[in-house]
Picture (cartoon, rainbow, N blue to C red):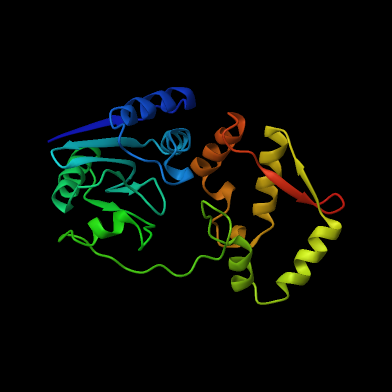
Length: 233
């Protein structure tokens, strides 16, 4: 069993090269969400002075990305924080976590968001030296790969006339694309005007987060789409 750990450069292009090279050593891994895509993961780790780790074991492979913070290391991928092949077990995961702690100097590893119906959760709950607690519900609509159930989830979340709001949107709003610099400026302005600014969770409150999204827009990986009513996005 071996563990390969590489520090991700701050340069976006170099970061993509490092992450892609490490993932190329695990061709059986399947990317299941946009957070796990090499470009998205590379820019996230580059903005947070992160590291990427790959375990090659007899039973399979695991890849994870980490952002060191004081005496902790935070997992950089949401929902499904580990890319893994079928067959890996909790002992493999413990080996990987020990190597990440040694490489980053972290006393603890923090996985802030794990989907309880995913393959990662089944491994994590079998670790003996771990603590798990439920998160409060998200204040936004979850992303899903198919989008087929998006509107139903909107209706469940919004109890105040969602269908009327949709009719007004269809009638008054114009969907438009903006260039990279204008798009990011509009994103930041929307965040500053929202509840997120009041709780200091908007883009400008996390410089590394802002750099990541700006880089994803600049390189063309992300395409911000805006709904405009009059002159307001």
